[in-house]
Figure 1 (cartoon, rainbow, N blue to C red):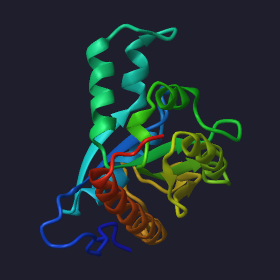
Figure 2: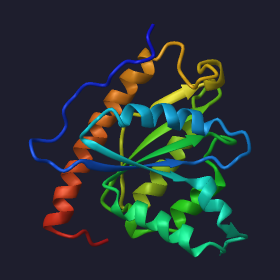
Figure 3: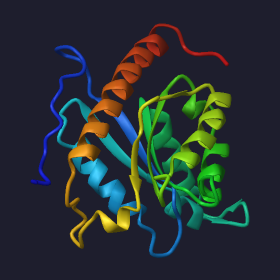
Figure 4: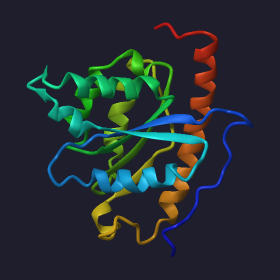
Length: 204
């Protein structure tokens, strides 16, 4: 089966500005698989002219800190700016010990208003659970930050067996279907909340 399956739908109306989506890579480990999955997912997003995509790599943010102290203020400011201007987020997370990475939690906790009144989708990966336990732990975290989490997810169980050396899926059909479903919901919430924030700034 071909790897090049387009995701076809048309969110937004004529003249609607592209939705700005920040894709957050949650793993910082050496040899992490998260970049392979993020690259695949971002490649599908960038086929949509209704979306603008930016990457927030938690590893780069983590490397700008030393034991909680900011050592690279420019990197920190750039990350905050990316999160602030985003209309929606997608978090790419592994599952570590039934939960999500500590560096990802640090990134989330170091920001507050940037998440408010915006939707958050999830792309997860791991063993047999496909990282879904990490996603379920992240939902209440984002609820506390007044963000809306998307019900449908994209998950990869044992992904290292599914992707080839070029970062493509041997059979992408289920992943493409899940991506299409999640992005429809993310886009609906993203556009609705962007309109609402413009009409009446959100106050937590």
